[in-house]
Length: 177
Image (cartoon, rainbow, N blue to C red; front, side):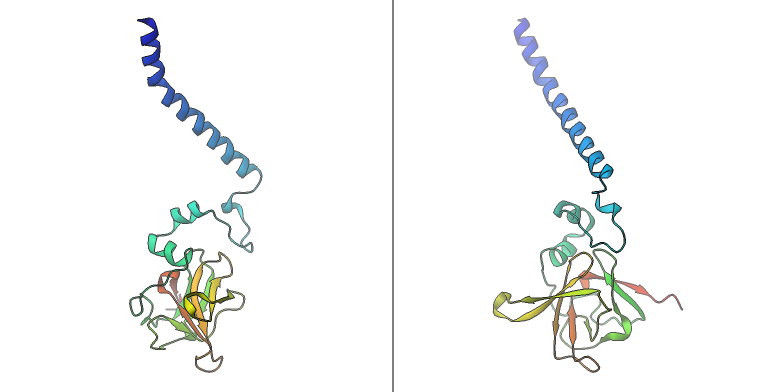
């Protein structure tokens, strides 16, 4: 009878003790990361942003995660910024890095926001041969988020068309008005 009672009590308290143990371990791990300046929130503004996959999933919407982290693409003519022509700055939805000035945006008819120039050092270019196409992928230079692609069929003065997913950007209007 006593053995049965001990087994019942141990079955009740084992999950509680296990939970406390796991939480203590996670707390100790967090303290180690903070103490050793490993936490992504303690980076300098000029450092490339480093986040784990689970951190990105916590801070981005499902759609943002699909495009920025999984290199997805929104459907043509559905993006918020395709027909958007206010004055201001387009920034990365993942990290806030400044990407494009509104003066460089133009109506290309491709179905995605198009710009003829990016801000200096704001994007990285990488060859992309997926889906049987030869393209140049554009990613944010700070967080490595997928933005879209650049093509050499744009207007003067650069001849480039930065074809960007709306979901990968946010917009900051000019404060002059």
